[in-house]
Image (cartoon, rainbow, N blue to C red; front, side):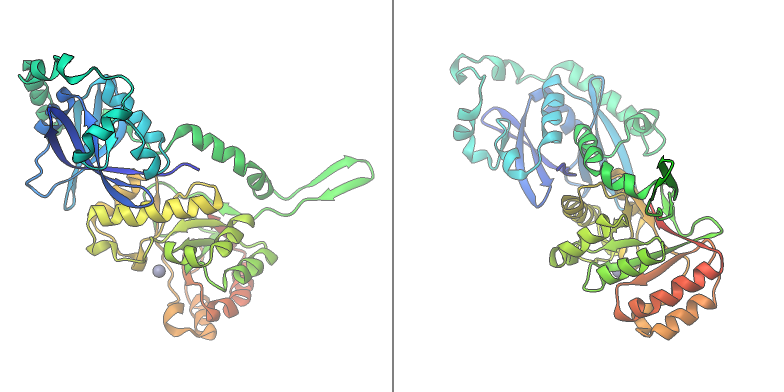
Length: 411
Ligand SMILES: [Zn+2]
């Protein structure tokens, strides 16, 4: 299973004539590690960063020719800064991209947990000359003039690489996931997809033998960015805050009526009800993340938002074996960096335009009444995994289908 990861650059250190990037690695947990890099790359990164100003720096896995990108964020402003890096840096970056756990990461010869463990760490290194015979550190003490030249280039780059406006950035903008493993996941999930995607049809094998295929659950593919509603003639039922003890029954009711459904799961509930999360996926229904701990994204910084997303996405993906593409911010609240953060992680934001406030009334009659008295065509209806909603569901589905609406799963 592949994993999303975030490399937050928090400092650049020199220790015993070696150069290190101090990084907060966000995988299943957050840990501070030291990445030994060549002096040239360390100097260039030093020139583009300023750790005294409260900026948040994220090293991306993007490389282009001899360059890579570090993203700088503060409040609602995010900039992609290009910097020239060594081939060694790019190779190490590619290795880090593939690593699947913090334990594996710490085994790498260029990664260490603390600078004090240097002598032990050096033993792991396969190719390194004994220090006394290695003239490189002394020679490298003087900064080569091209470092300054590059720093100047970078200042220009800063001006032209506002997020979303740089051609280079666009060309490189990809979710930071491991490509080879994408393929693997697609292969793994192919049988499930085959069951879900075909249109209802009857396959005629021989003249007198026919097999009725299970009818497909209708779906609607959302555009990138943020969605509030969908196309007229369709309606989406969405269920938040699960999984729960009600999940399986909700799925069974939807399935019975060939109705679609989308489930926005909270990571901490996935830990409590992993089988129910798996049940959603096994039956061909969509899962999105609803964060790890149901925090308010509008009052959270970049790092907290990334942490909530990455941890919940990795958790859900490890259970269902398929990529998570949809995110619903808890309470529907978000700030200026949320779109940037979710976009970086390859997620689409799903809000709603119809809210029966089921979590508040906990009254199935009121929920049904709300739906019957509002415009439902083209709507994304916000529901929660509660008993009242479960009780109301058969009547809601019947009503929507009577209106000739297609009840779709969101993708
Ligand atoms: Zn919620």
